[in-house]
Image 1: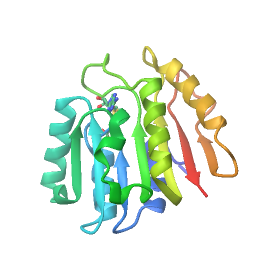
Image 2: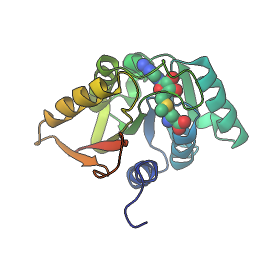
Image 3: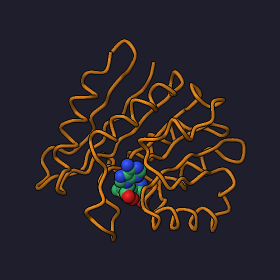
Length: 190
Ligand SMILES: C[S@@+](CC[C@H](N)C(=O)[O-])C[C@H]1O[C@@H](n2cnc3c(N)ncnc32)[C@H](O)[C@@H]1O
C-alpha cells in the first residue's frame, strides 16, 4: 500500500523526528510497542519517559524493553501523562524532541480505562511547552469506544486553535472507511 496505515505512519513520523541522543515521551505506553521503537531510536545516549495508569501496561512495557535490552534508556512511569511536568527533569524541559500519544484503551484489557479529553489536552499542552523547535507530537486518535467521540472532538478543536506561527498541524486519516477509523494528528513546532 502506498498510503501508509495509521500505526505504520505514526512510526514513520517518529523515525523522521527522532535521532540518537534525543529526549522523547510516550504518553500511553500500553503494550510497549511505541516505547520500544522510541527507545531504539534514542539509543544509549538519549532517554524515553513513558507513562501509563495501568500497572499491567507498565509491567508489559518494562518486560518488552528488558527483553530487547533497552530498559536503561527508558523510565516507565506508573502515573497519568497529565502529570508529565512532575516527571521530566528540569534539564530536559525545553529539550524534548518528540512525543507520541496512542489514545483510547489498552487492546486485550479493560476497555473502560480510556484516555480522557481534559487530561490528554493538559498533557499535550505541557509537552508542547517543553518541545524543541523542530520537534513533533503525534496523536493516534482512536474514537470508536464510549467517550472516544468527545475526546476526538475536543482534540480537533484544540489543535485547530494552535497558533500557525508556532505550529504546523497535520490531520492524516482514511475518510472512506466504515465505522470509526483511527486517524493521526501531528503537531510540529517551528
Ligand atoms: C491504545 S493504548 C496504548 C497502546 C500503546 N501505545 C502500545 O504501543 O501498545 C492506550 C493506553 O493509554 C492508557 N491511559 C489511559 N489514560 C491514561 C493517562 N491519563 N495517562 C497515561 N496513560 C493512560 C491506557 O491504560 C492504555 O494502556
